[in-house]
Amino acid sequence: FDKDPQIPVFTEGTDKMDRDDMHASLTMFYKEMGWDPQLGCPTRETLQRLGLEDIAADLAAHNLLPV
Image (tube, rainbow, N blue to C red; front, side, top):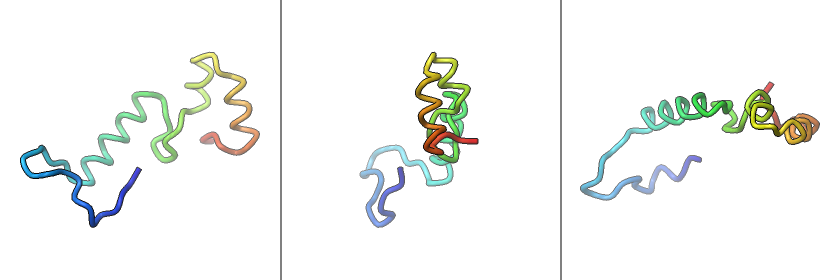
């Protein structure tokens, strides 16, 4: 998600958001969507709620699900 800090994020005349605000916004979004904010992926509960138990099992088998 992160990019080179040497490259300006916004051009002149656009709204600006500092890095801390961006990370806070992203964390709130992930929590609202049922995703793990540290890993940026859906939680097991979210996958199960969406009827994707088989996907949750596959991801867990490869240690790719948040604990």
